[in-house]
Amino acid sequence: MYLYHFGLRELPFTLTPNTHFYLGLEPHNEALAVLITALKTGEGFIKVCGEVGTGKTLLCRKVLNELPEHFVTAYIPNPYLKPDELRRAVAVELGVKQAQRMSTQLLTQRIQNRLLELHGQGHSVVLILDEAQALPAESLEALRLFTNLETETRKLLQVVLFAQPELDQRLAQQEFRQLKQRITFSYQLRAMTTAEVQHYIEHRMHIAGYKGATLFNSGVCKMITQASHGVPRLVNILCHKMLMLSYGQGRYLITKAQAKSAIADTEGAYSQPTYSKWLVSVFFVTLCVAAILVYGARF
Figure 1 (cartoon, rainbow, N blue to C red):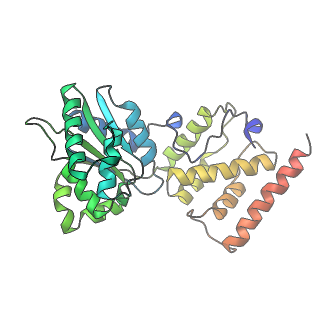
Figure 2 (figure 1 turned 45 degrees about the horizontal axis):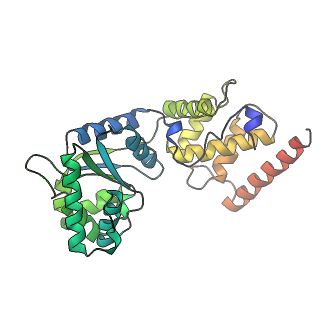
Figure 3 (figure 1 turned 180 degrees about the vertical axis):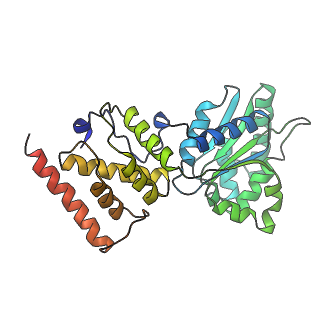
């Protein structure tokens, strides 16, 4: 695609959460500090909420990589599980043998025994759930009961919830008041500012191997921030499309015209539409393909 054109080793704006591209912006650094501190002090429930695309999964993976060695982690990326399925998933993550064949009562006992065993070996156990807003009501209650497992001095299991704001709405309901009271630390991820967006773009380009002059000037970055609302996922989508257009046109600088085309073509991005989304999308794709064919014919 455009790797050779811009001297890149890899695509800088993929949507896959990759800690190789992690940038310690203020909101993510603060969230990471809250998480690590809370886990080290042995707190029961910790919650990190953020809008779609604000980097929760990337932060989750960063936490998994940053935890001290004495932590044992159970990671559940898709928690849309019934209570029994949740228990078995936790048991498997903790290394409980034959977890899929046991009765619920025996499974619960084996999980407790395993937690006590790990505690006796000097380990702290943390259960991390991504997309926690998808947990069914019964599973949220089962999760709360997990944290009843404790010694006289310490919880045997700590729980970290990464979730969209819908989780806060659910926890505000009367039926979840006991769980809400057990959340001792929480953090709300915010969107990026214009300065952070520019730093974010430059960082990802640098990590991907770019060594040339600035591609995305401050004016373009301001447009990207406004269109993406400072959401990293949308920033990635927009920047990827702009690089495609620039490559297709044989240019080495991102222009405002390219930014406008990418914004108009992207669902969820803010723009002042003058044409229908369908027409703009067709125009964008046609422009990219035609420009690449013409430019590529030169070589």
